[in-house]
Length: 559
Image 1: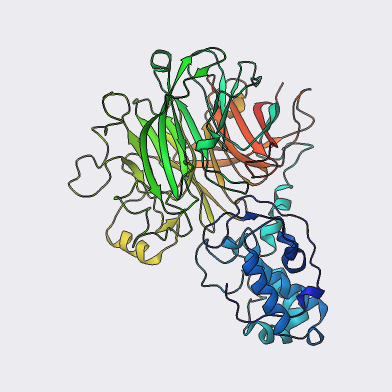
Image 2: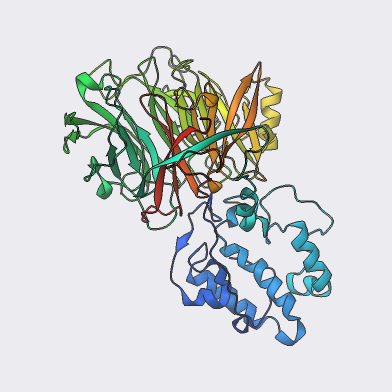
């Protein structure tokens, strides 16, 4: 870890801060933040003692440089404190964003918000060049993104502005009914289409629970493959990520899983399993697992990991761009490559030929290609499609694609569509050379139906078009959210445009027995049950080892 220059006497400065939110955390290099108990962190970068990006070696390097290069008498205490905050941002669990990229290390110093920069220059102008070797921020420049320090740490406060006592203007009112709690990072939900209206909820750690039609959680898990699933005690994007029942479940009793197996390296695995008794309770055949598809990926993040069946009977699979940041793998990255299964929506036929794991649908866009193009690809150019669904009435596929540094987007997926990454992040050019090539070739791209910047949120969570009956005010609208503080919205189609509306939870309008406020937690995913009703999965922290997750059902606030 390199620094141009450093300050001194850090052991004399006790930096004590509260823990920060881990929503959409990412270290430089694309790794997940580390959990640790390290007493050295108290003296060095105490704000990130329990969750951060520096290991002991990096911390020793910071300490050594801080304690040897300068004398404490030379620098006022306020400057020592500000300089320490700046240097410690390499340890921040959001360092991947603060240094303009999850893998790029061309910035020596973090992006500083205008207010912090002004404070730094007002108090320490004569010491900045002495310590850092150059000016490190412009106090007159406005903040172009939410990814600046300390705004990145305080974005939670921005989301507290949602009104609770009354519904805001242009806000769709709902209430929330808690279904269950004590779950661990629920990332998906599935229903078997057997008229039982049961819901199966998927924990990232490899455990699946069956919820009855009354939404009571059964005492024993439906499935426990935790020993097979790659996981850690820290914030991690890998694990058991999706489950879907076969459209012919009542006759063949099949269901499918997407998970990262617990082996050296990172791989994506799609398997089929079978139940011996539909129940309730449903009983799985533990030894029935059959491999459908498996392939490697270079990094531990950006898995995608959604499974769903289309009304065409084919299995759709979402995959991320391979992880890290900036889609750095290969000469053009994976998003714009047709020779990899990464960064795509895949479509395969798992039903037509029982003698093979799968076949390629005849109308897949690259099925007749003579080159190296992967025939499984249905659409491409995606970064990290986190939660994708099909509208049960229109057959349109909606996808929330998590952005890099600035833009979150919602897409409608079409066959053969190119969604632009890594040339474009949302509607904005990310890689100028690739943008120029696309423009010169007159290649058509599929643009987002809606996007928002990191001033609003940090990681889009794709949802569903509401087709239930309990919340008529949401009918036909696409309900989605952002991982930070469980903020949720609804996209409403108006001609050739999509209009975004807030979804607000209000106290006065909610009936007894319901939650009358936003749960203010991390949103992981939505689920849609057999009747078209929607559920949201949240947790107080993003660690898959902690049983602090909750499941809420969206209900009407209009009585």
